[in-house]
Image (cartoon, rainbow, N blue to C red):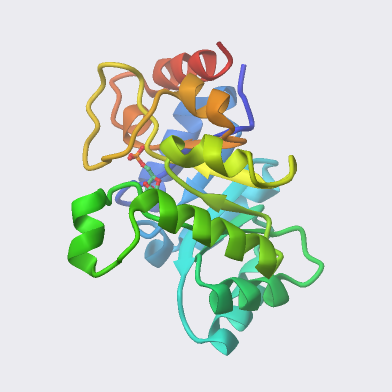
Length: 227
Ligand code: C5P
């Protein structure tokens, strides 16, 4: 039994490996995220293939460029038939993406603060806000820009949910079952905790794609999400 709110991150070395993973997961997963590892290898075309099969497709481009380029890139991406696209949550970038998607079905999400960054990493980069302040500031800017939602850590989901309309998407990576390896993710929560905190969607990669039995792992995460 799949749940459309679970996006599996296809962070894999080739399109063949991704296609194989989609086949292995079968009807246990109906939503997929294609990101920077696969995009240079034909990931966008593969996204079109999945969309044609009726899957939900999230193209995680994390766009960040001058307005005109972001607007035109978003227009190109809207033609692929994907459901979700990420851009960095800077006001000018988000506004350009909102213009670029026009009246297509593509929804735009702003990446607030990467879930691999902790407070020390933010200081090292040169930010004067802590992660939570920075995330909430960017959520306000995302709403002002007229985009559809944000990507954030599950740890900030409750505060975000309290300040946005119900239909606003709050999508959280950094999701792990209790006792599982966090990898490079620093700000994590279980699927159930992420949903309870107000996440509308979750993204899970390695805990599913690197599992001995990916289908069983996806089913376990889906069950946890619904608990
Ligand atoms: O393997 P794992 O479950 O950690 O994968 C999480 C996915 O979510 C990766 O594809 C990563 O690029 C993406 N992501 C993230 N943090 C963000 C935005 C996207 O981890 N803030």
